Structures are given as structure tokens and as C-alpha cells.
Amino acid sequence: MTERVLKGLSLSPGEAFGEVVWLDRDGDAALEEEGGGDPLEALRLAFSRVDEDLSRREGKAEGAGKELLQAYREILKDPSWRGAMEEKIREGKSPRNAVEEVTNHFKEVFLALEDPYFRERARDVEELGQKLLEALSGKVPGPERDLSGKVVAARHLRASQVASWKPGEVKAVLWKEGNATAHVAILLQSLGIPAVGGLGDALETVAEGETVLVEADLGRVTAGLSEEALRAREGTGKGRRAKEREGASAGAPFPARTRDGKRVEVAANLAHPGEAPRARELGAEGVGLFRTEFLFMDRETPPSEEEQALAYRQVVEAMAPYRVIFRTLDAGGDKPLSYVEFPKEENPFLGYRGLRVSLKERELFRTQLRAILRAGKGHHVGIMFPMVVAGEELQAAKEVLEEVLRELGEEKPLRLEVGIMVETPAAALLAEELADQVDFFSIGTNDLTQYTLAVDRGSTWVSSLYDPYHPAVLRLIQMTIEGAHKKGRWVGACGELAGEVLAAPLLLGLGLDEWSMAPQKIPAVKRALSLWTVEEARALAEEALALDSPEKVRRFLEKEARS
Ligand code: PEP
Ligand code: MG
Image (cartoon, rainbow, N blue to C red):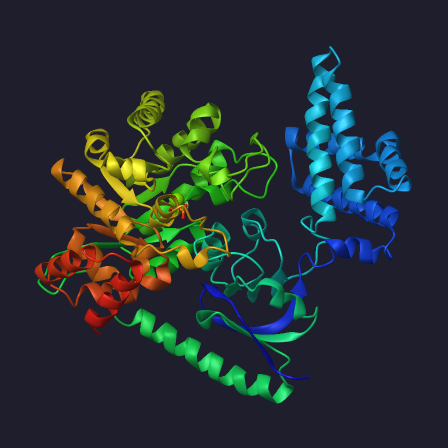
């Protein structure tokens, strides 16, 4: 077999090699292929895929979620529905068209009925029709396979799938789509799973069971390796990882200071409570962003107040006496939830997402706030709201928080700070006004970049245009920091840019007070900050912000970088 090198994007660092398991290859046109080119067989396979998927979920679900899934499976078994689709296929329609036409017809029949119970069934039929279409296009995974110790290859990968993996379970991920700030990538980073994305059609050349070498830092995958080559590479891979670990823990625990002695905070971004001890080992002085939504994903019902409080308490205790900032649920965008109704949107990142969902799903919001406040009892805790664009919604969120605080009485944190993520240009432009209503800002450069540059953060096609070093993004960061400082508020950053060594002196020069990042990046950023005085960094930032393209900014920062 000849060696082949596939180039993609580095989504999550690390190296691994192992056997490939495809998550969703047998979908797509392959459903027809698998059915021997017979469209009736493809339809049968789609029905059985969806049924398997629902039954798997039903096994894990409880209460109302379980009942809903049982009801879906009953509808799926209704012979008139499937019979009508088979009829259309016999008339010459494709499986996709047959599913669409019959689903629409049944939906209309239900909607025309008086009884609200039946009208409600229209939504179920629509949902199931959508699932069948997804199965036909390969988006519903086949029977669950054992992924432990394997390199997982996928065409489509959702954050909810990855959320159920355990750290170390999967060796590496190869993904046809994606870029480094997609939530799937962020989750893979937090699980420590090396990943290469944006591999496109080249990924299709990798066979099930083939052994590959994944060099995720380089965005490189090598397939078709001989046994000897694999053994030789195993040695170097292990050596390098061990060296990285040593290097990482070496200067980590010292508090972050600039060369002229100014204290700055360097904290961790976490998504699971279990990551906290490692973050401390690597030198985290708190948690600047706890992405709570991962507790809410890959399940049929929301986590109870008790379940959430336990998870939040675990982080708070592991990080004490440092502060932990919890971001309230940031669902929507590329993180839908099965138990919250999301509209079908052309651009979900511009739609029903973040605080917009919390303000509508009030009980979900209140339960989460209660859990955070209770978990923070006796400790220093921050709460921040995602996707804010105006003062009214922030005000509305704070009113709910105040109500909950009144209900809880003494059961609340020793110290509570309330803030927002600044991740829309609107929030950055209104920084000075919004600062009146909060204790702090945390700049979400991942979303701020996508919204400022009109570049979808998850898209492979436009990933070359996605650049947080774009002067427009940098000027919004500057405006945010200046607006907050005028009102005496502190500002952090928790997007991927905050974890970049290249950006450290630039953000210091812009006046940033706190950096929050994936734990493994902490030692290098602390070191980078220690090489600059505040004055030097200010001069650097001033020059960088006068440039007119991201390339020029990067080149300039690379030229000035210190090591
Ligand atoms: C961001 O947008 O920069 C951020 C930190 O939030 P998330 O990546 O979870 O959207
Ligand atoms: Mg964001």
C-alpha cells in the first residue's frame, strides 16, 4: 500500500495513530448502494436507522422524553405512512422526494383537524420526516459501535455526539468539515482528543479498519503506512508528547505577571467539571468560562437543578479559592437541544441562540441560575450571559437573576459578579453603556470574529477568511476594553484568540485584564506575557491596530515576537 498524506485543519492538538472507524459512512447515497441500488430498500434502511436511533435514545431517556420517543416509534411503525412512500417510489419518485411529499401530505391532514391533540401530531410527523431525510443523507448514524481506542472518521459530526464521549475514549478524530472554533472542535480540545478537520472528499479515501497516523498539530493525516513505519513513528510520537507534558508543567504554577510586575489573570475554559484538577496543575488561576451547555446536550430531558448544582459545585470546590465564571446556557447555533423547540432556520447562528433561548425558556433559565447560585455558596462565582446585543435583554436577564437571588435568601455565593460575553459587534459598540449594568465583560472572540467578518465559524469553505487578527475585530476589542475601563469594570477574553501566544502582548497592550483558554495553553501564554512590559505592549498594540489587514497584523506580530 502506498503512503498518502491528507491535509486538513488542526482542530485539536496532539498525535495518535490507530484503526479507523467510520461513524456515518454507510449513509448518504450509500444507503441506496447498500440496498443494492434499490430505492425501496434504501427507504427500508432509512426507517430502520431512524428506529434504531430512537430506540437508543429511548433507552437513555426518562419521563416525558421517554414517552415522546415511544410515541415517535409508534408513528414510525404506522403502515399507512410508509406504504404511501413506497407507493410514490413505485411511481418513479426518489426516496427523498417520496419522504418529502408524504410527510407534507400527512402534516396537512393533521393540521386540518380540530382536535389540538391531532394538530400537535403534525409537528411529530414533520420531525420524523426530517429524520428520515437525514438518514437518507447519512446524518443518522448506523448501529452504535465501540469507538474506544479508535480513530473516528466522520462526514457529519454534532457537538451532541461528541458530548457523550469520555476523555481518552476515542484516540483521534478525522472530520470532513469543521474549523477550529466550531463547538465540536472546542469540545474535542477539552476532551484532549487530537483532531483534524476540513479534510473534504480526501477523507473518503480512508477505509474502515485502515491504520492512520494523525498529526493534529500539523493538520496532517498519513494513511497507507507500513507496519515498520508505524512502529518507528510510535516511538517519536510518544517521546514528543512526554516532552510537551514536561514543558507544560515546568513554569506553569507561577502567577501571571508582566515583565514589569503587573499581575494579570490567566484562567481556564472548561466544559466538564472533571477537567478542573488538570487545569489547576497547568496553572489556571480560576475558570474564566465554564461552558455549561455540554451538561445539557445528548439527552432527552434537561438536567435537574440538583444534577446541575452537583456538577457546578465540583468545579467551584476544585478551583477554590479562585473564581469560577459560569456562562448560562448557550444553546442554539451548532448546539441544538432535543427537548427545547428550535425553529428551522437558514442561519441558526444568527437566530434563536444563547440568551434569546434562556429568556424564552424561563423555567430552564431559572433552574440553571438557582443551581449555579446554590453551588457557589461560600465561594467566589461569576455568572455571564451569552449573545447579548442590547441593554433590554441584559436587564431582563438580570431581573430573573434578582428574583432567584431573593428566593434563595442566604443560599448564595460569598461573592457574586455578573457579566456578559461580548461576542457581537453590537455589544462591543455599546460597551460603555452596557458596562453600567455589569461587573465585567468577557470577550468571545470566536463569535465576535464570525459576526464582524460575516464568516461562519464552522464552515470549511470560508475558513481562510475567518481571522481574529482582522483589524476590524481588534478595534472592537479595543473599544470594548476602553468602554469598560471608563466605567471601572474589568475585561477578560475567552475566545480562542486569548490562548494564542502571538496575541498575548497585543491583548496586554490593549489593556485586557484576564485571559481564559483551554488549560493546555496556559503555560505558554503565561510565559509570553512575562516577556513584555505594559508600555512595550501598548506601543506594539498601537502599531498593530494601525494596519489594514489580518496578514499584515500577523506578520508584524511574528516579527516582534519574543521567546
Ligand atoms: C466565543 O464566542 O468566543 C466563546 C468563547 O464562546 P463559544 O466559543 O462557546 O461560542
Ligand atoms: Mg460564543
